[in-house]
Image (cartoon, rainbow, N blue to C red):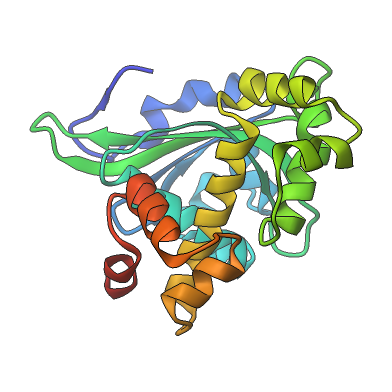
Length: 238
């Protein structure tokens, strides 16, 4: 997708109305505060709203369980710094509902002066049609295993064995659907959980490193800084 440039977020429902025509795809726009200023019909109906009006002004914390809302907001922080999220496999759920698997992408929205004024996201549902369900079918077992065991010492070989796959088949699936290796995905899950713990707990950074699967404090700090652009200590202060 090319760089998204709009004078303002006013009238987003008119600019993006065509997204209502795309099957099995949720789309939304948030302002700098994380408040929704647009959502296509599939998106707002998922949360029980009969019209866009019900969604406007809401945040992720109004719509999703707190643990998931925090992850979405953490993503938004990065997107509002200019980071693009491409085709990440994740589970999305509303309060009181079971989760569904989606491939999610997010982009910053700029005004003509080059300033970021909001974020745009789309999530393609992987459970609905045979064509788009392939990533869900092929990655559900390893993704679920990683989510449950990220704090332990997971090697690519042990992950492949737990999912009854060869190492080459496992790596091929991750490259095909997520454009990353299993090792990179494991690291991403660990770092996302570590960032959440930094925000929500007072645990020492060394303890968080160990509890999210990193062998030592220095390795964790390097990986965290490389992914998020700030050291864990600074991320906690911010």
